[in-house]
Every structure is written in structure tokens, then in C-alpha cells.
Image 1 (cartoon, rainbow, N blue to C red):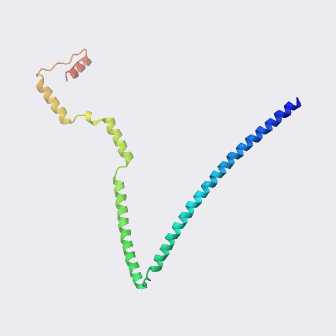
Image 2: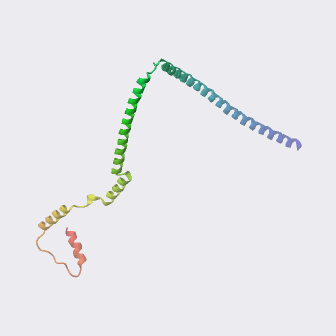
Image 3: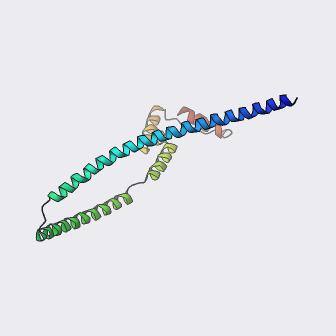
Length: 167
């Protein structure tokens, strides 16, 4: 019996070791993939650094080739730029005022949505104008004879219903 229990315990230990080895193996694979990505990113960064260094050296060369600016001429250019800047600022403030005025006078989207809701609820196309009603009454008077029915005293509701059915 001892041999069987020792054999089972050795077997369970070996299974545990096997699981641990598999887990370590997958961890090693993940680390190796990360190392490959780091190497690839390092190459990309190296290329980008080379390109940026070339651009910096070109800019330095351009700066070194520029002639010196005469101080008096630079001051004149600066005053002209200041005047132009002030002009642009005044135009910008005028535009801001115009936009503010327009935004105050224009309807907001919420207002338009509310008006649309009210118009859709009322459905003004189903209404008639006063002129249309007058024309309809004139046509009705012309088409009916001049005799007018008197309202019966017992059933006033029936008379009204019949009156509107004839319209």
C-alpha cells in the first residue's frame, strides 16, 4: 500500500512540475515576443532620430546662411507689423460683435424644434381662411332654395346633426 501511495504522490508531484514548466514556457514565449517588439520599436525610433537630426542640421544651415538684419530696417518692419496687427485686431473685434449680434437675433435650435412641434401638432393645412369660409357659404346659399327649415322644438340635437350632414 505504501508503494501505491508513494507512486501516486510522486505522480502528482510530477504533474505539478509539468504544469509549472508549461506555465513558465508560456511566460518565456510572451517575454520573447515583447523583446521582439522592443527591438522593432528601437529600430523605428532610431530611424526617426536620424531623420530628425537631418532636419535639425538643415535648419541650422539655413539659419547660418541668413544675412544679418539691419536694426533700423528691422524696427521699420516691426512697426509696420504692429500697425497691421492692430488693424487685424480691430477687424476681429468688429466680426466678434457682428457674430454676437447675429446670434442674439437668430433662433436657437431648441426654439425651432419647439415651433416645429407646435406646427405639427396644429397641422395648419387642415384649417380654412375666412375668405374660403365666406365663399363656401355663398356657394351653399346659391345652391339651396330660399326656404329655411324651422328648428323642431322636441329634438334640437337631431336638427343640428341633420343640418351639418347636409353641408
